[in-house]
Amino acid sequence: MPNNPVLNHHISSQFNEDLQDVNTKFMTMGGLVEQQVANGIHALLDTDASLAIDVQFQDNIVNRLETEIDEALTLILARRHPAAIDLRMVIAMSKANTDLERIGDEAAKIARIAQNLCEEGSSPRGYMETRHIGNQVRVMIHDALDAFARLDVDQALRVLLADADIDREYQSATRTLMTYMIEDPRHISRVINVLWVLRSLERIGDHARNISEQVIYMVKGLDVRHTSVKEIEEKVQER
Amino acid sequence: MPNNPVLNHHISSQFNEDLQDVNTKFMTMGGLVEQQVANGIHALLDTDASLAIDVQFQDNIVNRLETEIDEALTLILARRHPAAIDLRMVIAMSKANTDLERIGDEAAKIARIAQNLCEEGSSPRGYMETRHIGNQVRVMIHDALDAFARLDVDQALRVLLADADIDREYQSATRTLMTYMIEDPRHISRVINVLWVLRSLERIGDHARNISEQVIYMVKGLDVRHTSVKEIEEKVQER
Image 1 (cartoon, rainbow over the protein chains, first blue to last red):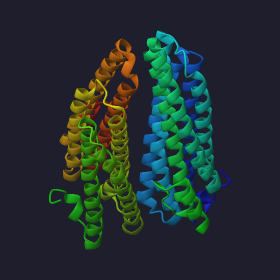
Image 2 (cartoon, rainbow over the protein chains, first blue to last red; image 1 turned 60 degrees about the horizontal axis):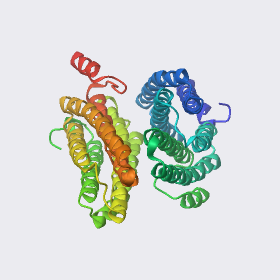
Image 3 (cartoon, chains in turn yellow, cyan; image 1 turned 135 degrees about the vertical axis):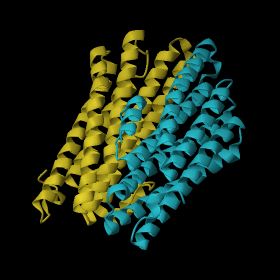
């Protein structure tokens, strides 16, 4: 991570190494989680039952990484007493670690639904919306992690804006599917499964947003949770 | 909190005070969130639109408390360099703080749905299940916070067991409502709203479980996330 100045500015080379190690693990977990989401959606769209099973299985690896990252962060707090941006990085990574693990959970849920639909037959509607929103949240995860790696506040802000789009598209897709079910109730059970998938994608967008808020906290020392994007932009410019 | 030995064992009385202050705030937030869930469910069951609006409004107070608690915890880390159980308490509270805030979010979502159903008319089904599962998750939140306040691992374990019950009852209630919709699709939109409420309650149960896992981490130093209740019981007894 050559672009991240936090990881090599310490007098203690052991401290640098500790931070770099946990950062590498965090980025590995991020890449894995991004892939899990992509695979969960593929399993659904291509009715690929074996991929669906694989995603559910891989969730164990995500869970193990979450535990290892939290352990490493606790050791850094106990031994190195980080201050200023180092402390904020540890706190931000601890919060973002939880979000990555939850994204992994949502990917596993999507995969379980994909497996159900492989067995009981596809839904007649909702795949186009799933593909579209799915692509957008994948990009959000990628950009949020990239912002984290490069301490890039502008990139983080773009993710916050993208999340507002996702929420609108999710509402619109949900309304479309509800209308369809009311008009043709024969496939309610299958369509509701797709509704759950869309809900998971919307949640994943929220988690990518949370990670981006942590980037702003880490870099600027501002807690921007529960704040509108407009207010955040103003606050960020003041610093 | 007379039963919590962590809060007054320090040589520095300022450290004791800092921990006590943040703990008081955490418990205040816990009580508020518990009330928010209760009110959200009442608003739904009694079609009380003004209570539904009130719950959504109060979510701001929960959000503010989350921010204040995280600020206080960061200051403790920066100034006091806590170690051993003190450090674990700070970490556990930071994680549990996120869970409490998410419970508040779910309560606000339930209240928004309650408001919708006040306007478009009640669902013909699902209220009995909502009342039942709602009561159970309220008890779970209460018990998880009580376990946190008293460092009570046995109480935390009981919450984990209760969460397994909730998951089963949620599955069963969901199946019942799906069957009802397929047989009588006229009220799909209203029934789906109740499905979302049940989903929120199930998520609240998960968050109460997470808080209880943090109690076990705080007291025993064991990370028991992603572990079955049976394994957790064995591990806890070994220490």
